Every structure is written in structure tokens, then in C-alpha cells.
Image (cartoon, rainbow, N blue to C red):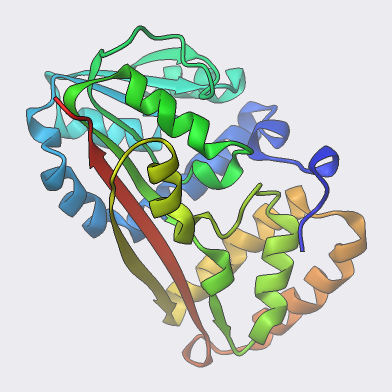
Length: 262
């Protein structure tokens, strides 16, 4: 259900203008709102409020960085992203330090950060184990490594659209692994870490689910190969005619965190 590697598009391929950066920023902020309660729980588990140096990899337009800045006004917070347009957008709207870099080879010395984290990142990567190994390398002994949210599209339920909507998402989201959430224990283990793994069930109903589908439609229009656009158009029409009370979406979103041995 996924395109060949050479044909895949990611947000980095699409995010080539400030206008698109604004679109993705709004999308990222809505995604963050769905998992806020889980992040607050995780922040306590990884002692985030006591951290002095924090790294977010894949910081994008800075939606999560802003939250971290609001929580930790005195901490040294660094964001790293590969996309210069996203970094430029972030600089205009955020006070964090920013660096352009590749998560597979972070431009950072060993043992620097108290907390190293990411959010909705591993699904886009061809080699997520290498990223987690880099997290381990740049985190201080006794520090924490966390993947705050990774979706599992294979476990998604969209009522009343059955498998059609899920198949369309998995075909067009361009992710390297849309089911990466369920693999977090294995990925951390391969990187040499014993992780605590949990699940948040994101359930959308009523007017919120209608808004979510509209967000996804607008996103899919950017990523979708031409052969699937007629199918998207048919589903879009079906969604527009369905009452919000008759719609429900369930998405399993996994998290994982581990402590680097002292």
C-alpha cells in the first residue's frame, strides 16, 4: 500500500514555501492538541521540568518547541530540522535555538542533553534505529530519550468508511512506515535501550472528526499520486454528505521513553 522509495514524497519535499509552512504548522498544532494529556504525563516521567538542556529532533515549524519554551523559560532548548523553509518559519515565530541537520548524523557532541525527544517523526524515516542511536549518543548519562507520539495507521478505524480511508492514507501519506508505532519496543531494543512503551487512543467524534477529515483531505491533496485523486474526490464527497453524529475515527498513537544508563 505504499509507493516505492524513489517515488515517495515527505513534508520536506512539499514544504517549499512559507504558505505551505503555515499550513503544516496549523496541522501540527492540531495534532499536538490531540495528544496533550499524554505529553503532560510523559513530561513528568522523563523529568522534563528539571531538565536544563533539551533537544527536539524534527522540530519542523516549531509547534512543539513553543510548548517547551512556555513550560521551561530558563532551559536551553535546541531544535534541529533538515528543512530550511521550516527552520526559517520557526525562527520568525519561536525563541529557541535552531540548527539545520540530519537526524541520522546529528551535528552535536556526545553526552550533551538531559532530554532528547521527537514527535511524529519516526514514521517518515528509512532508518529509525539510527536516529534512536543518535539520541542515545547526544544524551547525557542518566538523561532521557523519548518518542512522544508515533501513529499506527494499520490500527486505524474510520466509520462509516471502512478500509477505504485507511488504505488511501497509507498509500498517500508517503511515510516510510505508517505502522511504526507498534514497533517502538523493537526499535529501541535494536538501539540498545529498554523502553517503556504505551498507547494513547485518539478518538474523534462529532464536529471535531469532520474538521480532522478536512485537514487530512487538504494534506492528501499535496501528497497524493494522480491515480488516487479520483478516489479521494469520491470519499471527500461522501464525507461532506455524512452527518458528524454518524462519523467516528480511532487512531492508536504509541509513545516510548528510556533512560540512558548513568
